[in-house]
Image (cartoon, rainbow, N blue to C red; front, side):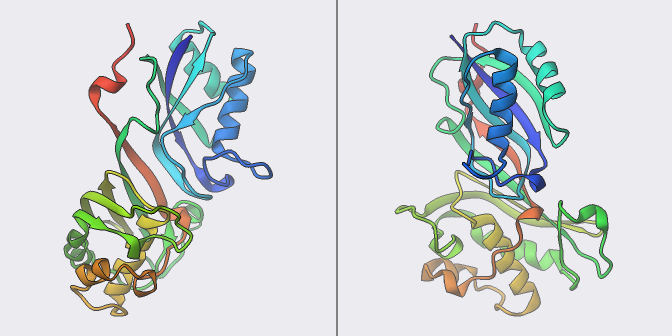
Amino acid sequence: MRNLLLELAYNGAAYHGWQRQNNASTVQQTVEEALCALLGENVTVNGCSRTDAGVHARQYFCSFSTENNIPEAGLVAAMNDRLPDDIAVKNCKTVKQGFHARFDCKGKEYEYVVHNSRIKDPFFKDTAMRWKYPINESLLDREAKAFIGVHDFKTFCSADCDKENTTREIYDCGVRREGDLVIFNVSGSGFLYNMVRIIVGTLLYIGEGKLPQGCIPELISARDRTLAGKTVEPQGLYLNRVFYDKGKIDREE
């Protein structure tokens, strides 16, 4: 039995997130169906994270077991022939038995892309959130630094979040501009449901003056979702990088 690790990238606009659902098209279902047809056996893939409907991934890992001896490069080529154009397999390698894409993950980096223009761009329809009001990215970058560290992020997760432990560590948080695109970058040990989208919404509210500058430490301490900014739309969110301990994803010899 081989344990294989796939590196994927996908545009999530056409999917109801990563995780398999009974009555909706998902990335997991699409990948599994292609693998089953290719390998001639039932395959269940274990994803590194759940992404919501409309959310994208520039880097995503999933692991699965198979008895098939197809070469790794051959699997990459064959999967890319079978998958729709909005999902790509970037790499495949054999990893140690017991490796799990989700449980061995040590952290993730997300980016949220805002098209900051008074004129809409049809090519950003499903890949960025449009915000027509001016954004002072330098101000928001300074405000974003208050998220760095170990905090209880209950204020910044959906009311539907069922996690008892809402403490997470944020490694870095910042905002930069690239032309008409304003990019919010957040990396950390783990994230709560809608956490990044609420962080972005809160920073945008600070930029608009709907929340005062310097309020983030107080919002964190309050542990009250109603005090933070809105949950921004999903299409601007990208899972950008996934972190593992190097020894965990060394190739199995």
